[in-house]
Amino acid sequence: MVISAGNAMMRYAFDLSSNAWLEIQWYLFAAMVLLGASHTLRVNEHVRVDLVYTQLSDRGREWVDVLGTIVFLIPSMLLIAWFAWPFFRESWTIQEVSMNAGGLIRWPVKFLLVAGFVLVALQGVSELIKRVAALRGYVHLDTRYERPLQ
Image (cartoon, rainbow, N blue to C red):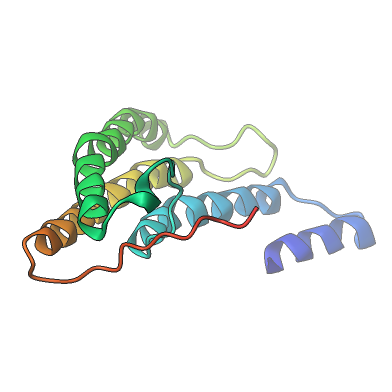
């Protein structure tokens, strides 16, 4: 927020601008989204397709979470990370820099793709362990889900 406000102030008040400041805003936004996704999963605030989930018992929700995590979440996150790795590796190898004048190096933001999806997959493993423990009766999880207000 400080970078965005400072950049806007410098641009409009003093007619000074820098591509690096614009790009760092994009990089920070990408970091916030990609690195925050695993936390969102941890606190059970991720987006759901809520057709029947709220109608199920706690045990039913735990089964849906287990199956969804095994079949969809972990494989898709690892697949995306797998495909993002060459994208990052090439950028790292050639030390890619933005084509904009004064732009930043590109490989750190491309690494965020790999890191973000791997972290979601790892959090998925953590959630899977918790759900299996709940199904076996070792722990009790709060599986309530509130639909977002629209």
